[in-house]
Each structure stands twice: as C-alpha cells, then as structure tokens.
Image (tube, rainbow, N blue to C red; front, top):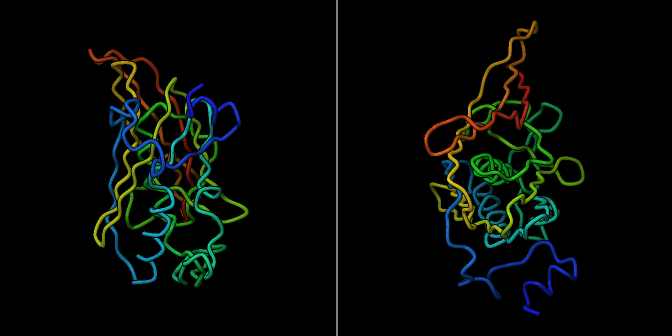
Amino acid sequence: MSRFVALISAGVLLLSTKDFYLSAPLFIDILSTYTTPVSGTDNCVTNIKLAAEKCDGIIIPSGSVFSFNDTVGEQTASAGFKTADAIYNGEIIQAYGGGICQVSSTIFAAALYTNLDILEHWNHDYISSYIDAGMDAAVAWGSLDLRIKNTYSCPVRLDVTCTDDYLTVSIVGTKTDDCIIEIETEVVATSDPHVLDIATRRLVYTEDKRNVFIRQVAYSRYII
C-alpha cells in the first residue's frame, strides 16, 4: 500500500507537501489562481505572511474537507501573530492575527473558480479593500471558519505565496474535464438602504460555451 493510500485510510485529511508531495505526478494542472494586493501595517503584513505559510502546501484528498481555522490555528502571540486591525461586531479593534482574513478570502476566491464545494463561508461586515464584494471570506477563531470540500476524484493542493505586495493562491490538481468556470456577483434588491446584499454564483460551461449549470455559492450582506 502506498503512503498516500495508507494515510487516507488512517483518516489523515490534510498533509503538507514539504515532506512528501513536492514532486507528486498527481498535481499536474493549475485548476485556478487568484491574487490580491497586500497592504497595511507591518504587523498586518506579518500576520498575512504567517497564515499564508501555514496554508501553503496543504493537500486536500478527494472527499476531504479543508478548514482554514484548523490549518492556521489560534492566533496568539506565542504562535507568532501580531496585533493589528480587526473587525468585531462592526467595530475596528486590535486583535492578534488581524489581517489573516485576506488569506481566507484569497483561498475562497480561488476555490470559486474550481468545482470544490464551499461548505462554510462568512462575509465581513464591510466590503474589503483588497477584494470585490461577494468574494471575501471572514474567519474568526472558534466561531467563523472557511471550509471547502474536495469533490474531485484526485487530491488538490493549495500553493500560497505572499510578498510585501501581493498574495497569490493557486489550487493545483488534476483536471478531469474541459469545463470553463466563471464567477458572477449580483446586487440583490433590498428595502434597507444601509445594507448591500450580494449573490455570488458559479457558472460552469463546456468548452463550446454551452451552459452546464449555474449555482449560487455564497450570499453576502454588508453594512454601507
């Protein structure tokens, strides 16, 4: 039995590429890539880079679930996180790990352009500066998580890189069809002038642009 099969049989869901899968032939296709601009205080950038490093190289076997919180862990000083701006109950506060939502948001946006299932998603109270409305993913230790299920027949890997200027997430796996995926966001009419509701939909086409299906994958409400 191969180590890959043995680990899955043992119930190991997330593995690091750094000790085994760096040259695995399974990961031959870039299924999607998404980049967001990095800005903010030095502490914020430190937090983003640390969360990005923890997510980089994570493998999600077929049928398994990626949890951002389980992967990154609790944001504490002992874990290397710094205090930076974060939003709590609509207020800006200083919190350890402030800024890491940019990592969860960029992973979420990259996942939208694949056939991965979004099992849990939360939006921020306010529209983020680094990503469009309907594309962000808020996380908070112990309450808000981003969870994504691998519905492909092969494992997928998260390649996450972060510089002082840009954060990029690529989802690498094995492409098994010729589908083209597009994402659309639409403002949903409401009677409340102080909120903005956004429906995020995944559009999947065949190579000849014949529509296969349209599915709403997120619904976000922002304070404006």
